[in-house]
Image 1 (cartoon, helix red, strand yellow):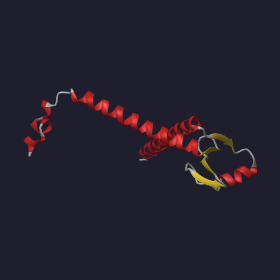
Image 2 (spheres, helix red, strand yellow; image 1 turned 30 degrees about the vertical axis):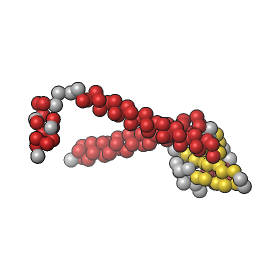
Image 3 (cartoon, one colour; image 1 turned 30 degrees about the horizontal axis):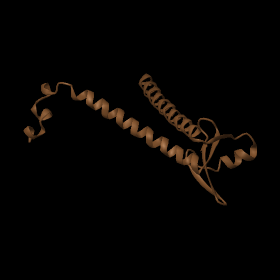
Image 4 (cartoon, one colour; image 1 turned 90 degrees about the vertical axis):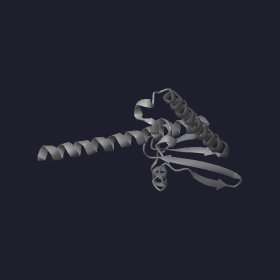
Length: 135
């Protein structure tokens, strides 16, 4: 009985750890795109910065207007424990990079679907090959 409980707890722990790794990888990829788009890395390296940093919602873009300038910040307590700061152009560049990546991902998925189109569907029955036949 105790062995099965330990196995279940080990499996749950593994799933949680893998989920955390996936989240860290997603955040790291996002941050790579931010830096490439013009965001600056700002370390949280003083007690005053840390106190302010802890008040911010993690992994969300925040917009601040200072006079005629718009500043975007992105706090990351998970990967770097830092703040990314960029202007309106950096944010626009980032949004374009995200759009381009999604488009490329969709095109790759569509190309994969075309490869699957050459697969032989007939052993699966006529309703798979021709849905009208099934109805």
